[in-house]
Image 1 (cartoon, rainbow, N blue to C red):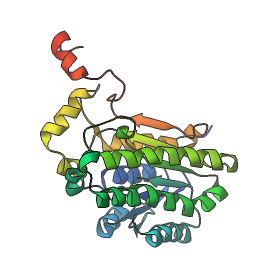
Image 2 (tube, rainbow, N blue to C red):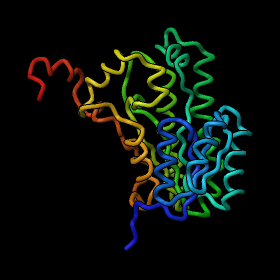
Image 3 (cartoon, rainbow, N blue to C red):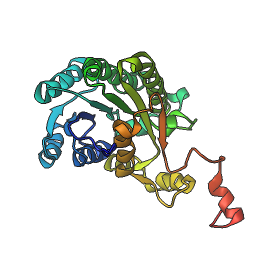
Length: 268
């Protein structure tokens, strides 16, 4: 019996691969036998990570540039001669973006358009370029979305709306290409401790989210990588068109659970 969670012989592209979640996913997929194209706008960081991983390559990716996105797929396929997994993880992030992305009444149209151009259109272009190769390998796509795509919030209206669009893109691809043997799923992290998060959100914000987490800590990049690698593997061969929420239970409880603890004790 084979180990269905292994990725031996597979080729994967991980976008945003030099970042926290992307880097953890690239490392885990390599550990499980895959060869990985680490794609990121920060090419030097992608090259540094690829140099640590057996058989990996680095590819520069500007997800807001259609030609760059198409070239990413072409480069990976030319180098590895196949493609089995596309992990769409890259997104428009950073402290300036997080600060500017508030509610709709105060939304800057340029920020909204840029968010959708990168997060939604860029991901669609990556999928479009990858699908012919995934058809040949009967491969799959895993999109990183967010638990904010499933909930309302006071802030991040552009980001959360773009991630909700990716959930529908996930379902659309699963429906239209399932009979060709292609699966498409999404992972929805909650607030995850990465260098980008630590830079974008101050401790009081992180503590407020941690209070609403049902676990005793916020998630880390390796937690999300495990979910992605599972969905990309044959262990998830009968799962498609789904969103795997990986947020430590933040979206699984009644609102205000942190305040209820003050009434019912620390074990509530």
